[in-house]
Image (cartoon, rainbow, N blue to C red):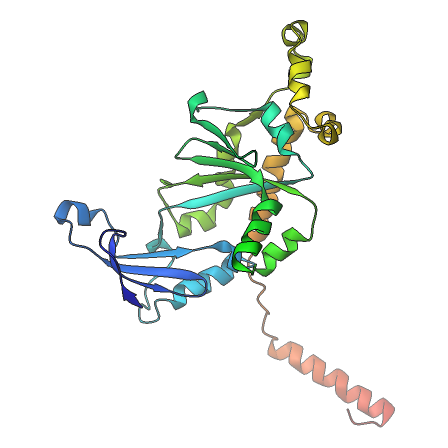
Length: 274
């Protein structure tokens, strides 16, 4: 735990833990500004946990003296959603993609590795394996989940960062699939089927921008297939992430008596004590 720097952050204090950073006690900017700043803020990343119930337990354990605190008390200030598609070249995405509600000038392509679109929601499309490889070289370590991704097929990640979700954790847990609607903004276009483009040689120009080793994927990943995969993969991962913790049901007295009776009968029939 150490004091914060006024010029860099909103909070006077923060504590960096293994899986989270906790900040508290905002600087005195004035009554109006401070009213909009939560007294405590927790930055926590889902990559450290296999299921939501593990993250929840970790989060609540940060406030051991607050016995009445629950998920309704945690407002989500920022969340990142992602959907992964295996063996999808970024060239194909760049060739087919158009995104609803964003202006052309908000799109950038950084070093041929990442597509950036907009600010809030902020969209990133990138090769996840390459990102993890750079992280491994820089930090020398990855989480278990990240290592599993590294050992699998190449993955293109569609990421949406939302800064104004206006939802608390309890609302999210009750209906996590509602977040899938954010992926509706991804649309793809089959340029090769557009006769007006073909007449002026547009398709040939388009294909020249796609590396030769990726051109076979162009027929595999059509518009509807890409849209379906993004939605399906997100819903599948969110369903697994929010899967409830298995709870062992206590054995009833009647069931215990039946078990003991069966055990006693085995002893009588075999003459052997277990």
